[in-house]
Length: 392
Image 1 (spheres, helix red, strand yellow):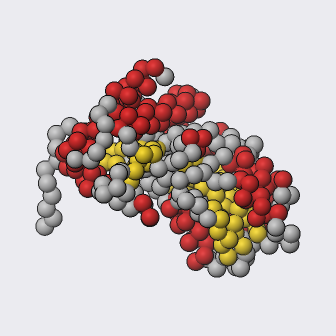
Image 2 (cartoon, one colour):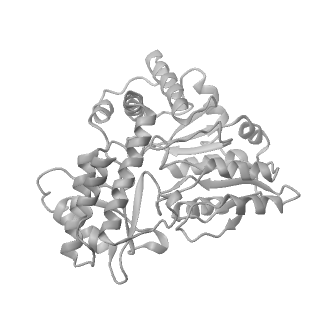
Image 3 (cartoon, helix red, strand yellow):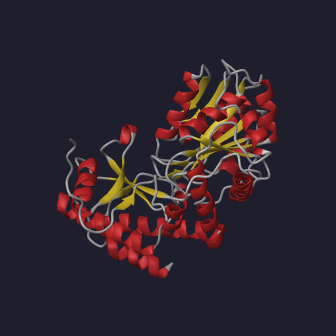
């Protein structure tokens, strides 16, 4: 028999950078009775979802949905476009970029790593240098993370594309937009992305369980030549079934109900207003961190993420102990440090279905936790955040 502590009264504050809070309308949609996934009503639902997802990504290209985590979408992007032994240029910009590279290596791809300190965005000039030196075109793809969830650094994908164009290199551009799509501007077509990888549990305000690939025509051409084994992840059966509004396997019907409701919420608020809201909340969060005298993990102001803020504790501070205290005392969940920053940082998620009062409560909880944990800091983070919210 399992044992557990009685929950505290009041709501739980889930302020990790994903999964994010699921809005009530989405929860209600998820609870609808399941329908026949081969019915006309389901086909209509699928077509509507795919059309609106394209608008979120700013693309006229196909959008594919898998019942999967984002890791599955990583694999789908690789196995559909590449062959064993192909070289992939990747930037070690953070924990999730490193994990995607590990997937590539397990698939018998050769990863050329551009080193990074996990505290800055991707340097397009370095990508250009690597590609310009590859006169034989041995590098078949450049795979980058748009918004690195482990560090709070966002990169300019349009600049990466321009760097590739300056090098006149034919490599595909694969982009992980898992923690950016639906929360900040993303333009698959204008940025010349060949495969966008995304997932449901962050800006799209759903539970985990859906993953996406958005394909360029160039990517589809590469898939016709690629020889890595693929079955479940194969694009073509999915593309063919989607023409009729169906899937080549049993889809995650109720998650699609939730996605339908989430897309309604996105378009009712308006994408540009959503992007402005995320940027505003990020600024208020950084104002609190600066008032506390703590250090932002992201050192480049131009690369500050609009969806999460990673905060470093002073030497000797235990970020995981602070996180545990916040959970036990205030029902507040913050993101842990990952990889080489385990125990050294905490991450504040401010994305998805999120508003001013939720941010104010989160900042208040953290300031109380810093005091209770005896972590050296200046008071006034709450006031700085409130000032920023009122002023901005």
